[in-house]
Image (tube, one colour):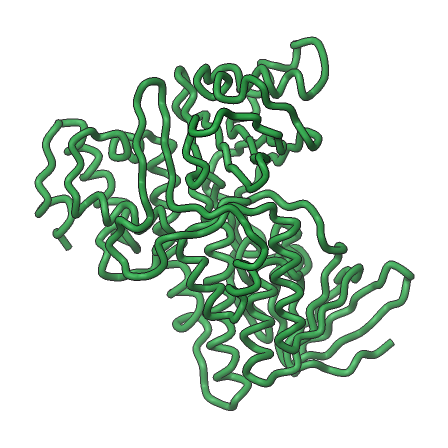
Amino acid sequence: MVGAGPDVLIIGAGPAGAVAAALLAQRGYEVLVLERQHFPRFSIGESLLAYTTQLLHDAGMLDAVLAQGFQFKNGASFVCGDRTSEFNFADKLTAGSGFAFQVARAEFDHVLAKEAARHGATVRYGEEITAVDVSGALPVVTARTEAGEVWVHRPRFVLDASGFGRTLARLLELERPSSFPVRAARFCHVADATVAGAFDRQKIRIGIHPASPDVWSWLIPFAQGVSSLGVVATRDHFARYAAIAGTEEDRFWAIIGDEPKLRGLLARARAVRPIGEIVGYAASVRALHGPGFALLGNAAEFLDPVFSSGVTIAMHSAKLAAGVLDRQLGGAPVDWQREFAEPLMFGVETFRTFVTGWYDGSLQDVIFYPDKTPSIHRMICSVLAGYAWDPANPYNGPQSGRRLRALAAMCREGAIDPRAAGAAR
């Protein structure tokens, strides 16, 4: 079957696809979203950053999200043995929202997809993209329904928001190896049964393995006493637990038990969904755009879950792409590299710096430094809150790595010069 050519065809109805669809539909374009799965469906990545609240507002979705009663999030708590360090998103350099949400993604993503439809986009589920041809004047997208029907679409432009499915990266051979080592995440949802006040449910808790600082855990509280719980480590680290007798859940709790404070906090917890695992999740591509298409969010680049940057990058990429595409479809000349790829990568490189610094220990030195300089703390907090695209923050952008390493060195030496650490350009 040949479908009527929409202005924009979006692959995937997750946060990137839904936000892009809503923004473009609000501008009057005909938008078709094709999603392989049926919503609601499980997805990992449940702790949002404060900048996403602004992006939801800009897409006209914030009221719908607020109405769902998701757990409010105001920051992050880092724990390593007896050391703790808290970051409150309101205490940041960059102006903007100081709160976010901790969400069951099945429900959250469904809300956003329904909001995209409310704003005028057409969202179709159970349709898989099987081929894409961008060699002609218009892209040609072939999709197959679950009933076996084959549709051929000729939109004016294609946005790939397929997340870990990475549809265009695969079909157009754009993938390239990530620079990050292969790591794995094991996770589940638990009825946490924690005592009231045992920990701050408005913060994600990030715990560090007492003997292996590159191994870390997350505890993300939802509403109604359920939390997302996970551990990130190398495959070799997880392989040490393979000989433990029992079920995958028994081995998972053994892994959690290596962090005594976390296991004590969850002494009465029980799993409410099977143990899941993602291996080798870091991904990259050779190009973020090409003739008639652009890649959004995880479909282009995924770094690491430690700073919950995935949804933030996805939504920001959607906002950037919608703005450029609006100008292009309106007849204006555009430069996708200068107006989309380079601005997007400014923030992605910021998060890359922080992920690299987390695993080489330099960022942990900064986070746990006991005598924090308030101005520098606000700069670091801005990044942790998702405001990675603010050029006024010296810890954002291409120079962030050099500056973070210099700051970590001063923390290790025990004295920070605010002018050297924060104001230097």
